[in-house]
Length: 242
Ligand code: SAH
Image (cartoon, rainbow, N blue to C red; front, side, top):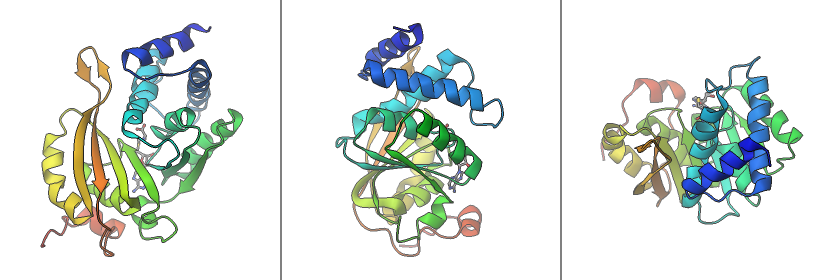
């Protein structure tokens, strides 16, 4: 077995993520092709393979323990180079994974690499989260909505909760200094129909957590006036007069 594949399986085991050989091969092949394409279009700043394995592949896979039903409809908001969506799609073959981004070029690269590797349970969706959240084809249609490194939690909740089905979950990956963002997002999450179910620890590296996962359950429908239009979300504070 290739050394890098062995390493990924081993590190996965340490992080309590079971990766089989076929899955590990695909994950590493995705890394190789993405790093190749990254020479021409900026998809990631992480170009060292060891770092890529940890900070992209394993970090994305920490979400697996929170996804209870493998036959699920997942939406990755602001997927960029395909994280965490592609590693999840490789591991959860029965899931139906939609990768969304506002940059079309990134999506076409991710789509073409996925097709080349035979990752067939993904589709790409070009657009802004706050517009797709008002589109009946997408609003409240996803069981699990994920997002990493896209926006602060208040903004992200307005992007992601309208797209989450009632009964579904919104999983946000945040840095260790998440507390302040979380405090600020408490009321917006409530208004948007969510309820914080748990704060889970993500990947542990050198005795520090790379991310925590904010696990938000969608408990009631999002009011029709959310998400607001782009200019309003960016400019105006979250309206919290309840
Ligand atoms: N999730 C990836 C990429 C993070 S970079 C990772 O963790 O590596 C943030 C990405 O979000 C960019 O590709 C950007 O185009 C996208 N993005 C930012 N705002 C967005 C919005 N409102 N709707 C959809 N995509 C958005």
